[in-house]
Structures are given as C-alpha cells and as structure tokens.
Length: 211
Image (cartoon, rainbow, N blue to C red; front, side, top):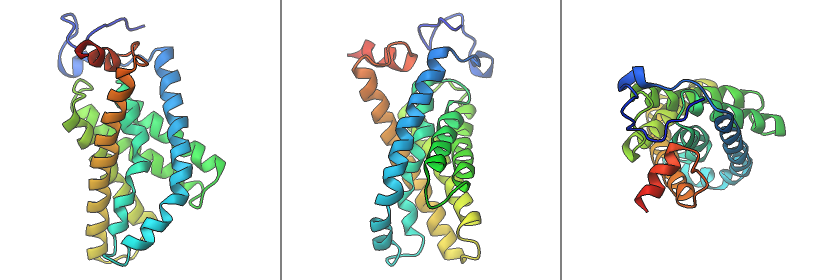
C-alpha cells in the first residue's frame, strides 16, 4: 500500500521508474464513484445534446463534434484525482458500461467508445509518466480523449462521410475534449480538493497546502 505524502518525495525515482502501479482500496472506491457520477452525467447528456446538435449541424457538417466533451470527462477527472496508471481508462470505461446497461441510443457500442476514449486520455498521462498533473497536461489528455472519440465516431457512426466532415468533426471533438473534459475536469478536481474531500490523495493535499 502506498503511503507517499508528496509527489516530490525524495525517495521516489523520477520518470517512468517512479510510477506507482499499485492501487489502494480507496483508489478503486473513489474511481468507481467518479465513474457512477459521470455515468449519470452521460445519461442526461445523451438526451440534452440533441437540441444543440440540431442547431450546430446545419452551420457546418461535423461541428456537432463540439458537443462530445461531457462524454469525455470521466477518464480525465478520474486520472486527475486518483493519479494511478489505468485510472483514466477505468473510469471512462466503467461509466460507459453503466450508460450502456441503463440504456441509450447507441447500445453496446457505447462500451467501445468508452474504451477508446479512456485510452486516448490514458496515453497522454502515460507519456508524462503519471507525474505531471497541471492544467496543460489535463487539457492534452482531454484532447487525446477527444481525438480518439472523433476517430472512433467517424469509423462507427459516420462511415462514408467526406473529407470536410471528417476534418471538422475530429477537430471539433478534440477541441471539445481539451476544453470541457480537460479544463473542466481540472477545475472540478481543484474544487473538490479545496473542500478537503480529497485529503487522502496527493491531488487533494497539493491544493489544500496552497490554501
């Protein structure tokens, strides 16, 4: 069980050698709670996005990709709070599984989307050796999830779409991921940390030390 109290603890090696792979029970519990909460967000957004989508689509085909962000929050938020390898993939995938089991218009393919989107965010955090949790990295992770989302949607739901739609859609999902999932999750994590709710995590202790 990890008992580290600071990301700058002198005994911890830098880079990939310093990655703490083991999850604590509290990590699993909190990541699962985040996934359930985000699944509830998904269920609301599965319906609420329809109105804005009908407004954006006629303006420029593919622009509806700007609405993808809320579906990408789970992975980035889970990783920012838990800070363990696999957290982005776990929370995004679990939220997608719950959404599919409760029922939505995309059925079991929701799980494929959750897997791909979670991997998109996970790869970015891995590239930084799970050691950098600042806003730029959070936004890059959101962009990674958005890029994965755009490519996956293009293949699954928009097969045969022309090049203009493809470019606009993937660019839109990437921007939406960076802003809504990246910036949004970073703000949510800091807000939760400021309340003291995350004191068992490095993400919480870093914020409370600055207050």
